[in-house]
Image (cartoon, rainbow, N blue to C red):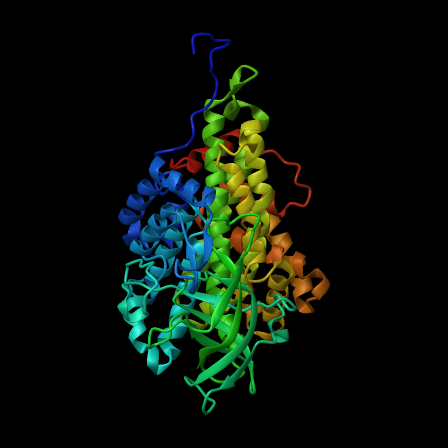
Length: 544
């Protein structure tokens, strides 16, 4: 243009071409601490690639071009296929190449493989969250299928353990990589899966690995392009889990129909559908009546991924806000140098620091599958993590938007997409109340859990009066847990587990500041400037 009304200045550049792993001191430390330091070089490479402008653009494109349901082919044949933008497939290729779908399930995995996989998951979450849904479900289903896949489908296992993504609609035996989806909930029940009405009748004789015919519907049929789904249905022996392939062993399409794709608030790159089963073929996993038990086993994986995903989104939102604050000037100073803004950013950074320590302590426990105490720890804190971290993500991203002001609310920025993405992790795989009731169930039915907490927290006793006081108060509630207080109990458990990790592993003044921020009910304290400087330095990859 020949004319000009003003010169553009004081407008920060977007955060691109950064290393998502090397810029996160808390993540680097946690990976080493929990036994996956051997993966550091690859994680740095993944972090560099995912932080590039090209990868971030793929994330934007996948959400700007949501999937479409193709009901018919040009000849008029019913196909019920889902068409994705090319960016989706490129992102999926990266996830599979980095084995986010199967790293701990490989033969003879390295110690700490669960921790390494969690770090890779968080890095991918910062770029695009919808692609994590099919990866999460495939990851959760694989160990169950390794143990209980019906005989006709045992030749699927090698393709579940490759690092290849294969989007072709072909019989599984002709593919280089596979996806597994889930069909659990129905209109009338939601989380109350015992109210499911989809029925399953044996084709010949009932029993483990035998074929059944399924008739009914699924209100949320996740990742409809999957090669098979694990589906809950009512058999004579009770609610049961069935392996329902998209294509039958002879190559024919199974008798299930996609009614529509869901029009969702966020998670728009990912296809979620409604489905109907018309005498669909399904093979029983385990025995009749074991459906809920199988769901709980898979739920430990999917729920943990919900917490990881929310944390990754929060980390990205904070990184965008902090990068903006270092560039933007207001009232004669950079935002990051304004006293009140420094307090806001410091508290956000400290919140993420605690989450990272807690999540990777939990990742380490989940990976120790032969240790009874570690599995009990994971059983308690997996639903607690999903509740607390997923809930905290929504106001956290809103705060990051405020750092940017008006431009943070506009679609040219990535924060609106992150904000829309946040609620799904609180809702999917069980809403907040379901998670807190699950925590309560563990406290009531696992007699050793309180002793496990006492032994763990005794290791840091006397290091923080805020921690010690909160633990004394919580123990009174644990003697007879009340359902009405289960949200408060769950949050306090997460705070205490996080505080214990901070007190063990972080510099004392940072750990004590976290305890004061999270455990002091007054919440009116300020972070001292030397501590604030250390916290913000760590948030950008410095040593602190």
